[in-house]
Length: 485
Image (cartoon, rainbow, N blue to C red; front, side):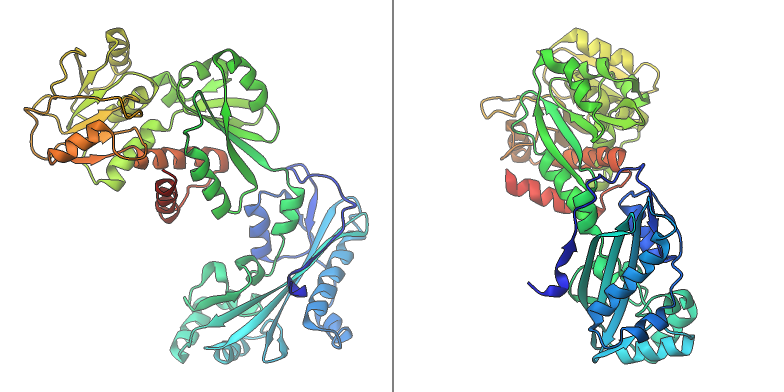
């Protein structure tokens, strides 16, 4: 392994980094502050007091890697003396181009000249981080990234210098990879964090307490949620892990003890506990109160809270993935359980004209109709024996698990349906359900539950991490799930 990418790690400090850990950043760098905020580290800034030019002159006989580390060390030491009880982080970055070390530009003209030199060529960024506590070194690292800028013309550089003078003067290369205004940066080797000049991820991975999220149900073996969330966790550089948790009905109350653990962020709730889970939480939101079902548990301080992202995920899927207009439309809804409740409420909020509910248990269907009484949407009930889809129907939604098993067949009567009807089966499995196979054969537009699964997962992810996966990450998650089934 290249020595430039090896970490020097000391383990005297055994503590975990939590929101209460006192961390001091010996730098005023906006980029370094942003990285610590990104990792949710509680810190304050105490600028170092060293003369960087003097330090570089003092260590000029050393290699660029050693110079960067010496500078990071000097910065940390200058602050650690007055703050011995805190974790103090010093960091430095050097740019090496054609075997010469470059400093931050002292003027706009110098910055322009540097960009003209770097244009179309490769250069190396040597980054160092040095961490102390009780005036002792506890961890350090040096890394190298190789960057190539595309060929830039003079007008591009001049325009950039006028619009971005701060970046030109405050960064060693005159650019930021996280905000590539020139769209010119190609990373040849190393990581984005190395280019940003603050290689600290490995330290945080070692020290920060890994957060846990569960998907709870029975059965749970079939759940694809871990594939989705662990991919997003990795893509967003989060220190967490999402896994399955099989819970028996008599263990629901014990589940609260697990959720109360400090490092647990929350859980997804699936069949058959979406309604029962409400009994053990401290607070429910409007969506959960309206639907009387929850698929997402999250924490706010010491409080365990319940929400329902099924409806949001379904509506977002309908609008973004299939471009369907819901207002004043007619919906044929099959089922009256936890998922159906969340979807029915969301359909009412989307101002659909009418929902016809088909459910085996008529009393549950009546309860669902009652839950929707405060909306203007008209709610009809249809007996289970009568499976004819009404002529005016625009959208059919199967909210039951019928079709999960190959032997299960949801046989509907399509004899009077209109052209252009959309069939949405929220079941997701390998191969199409009987309902989707038949609908496709009849020439109707269809979708399985993959889009809803991903979209409701994105809503849950936001509750835990305050981050929405990007559309690119959502599409990638779909591809991952498809490969797994």
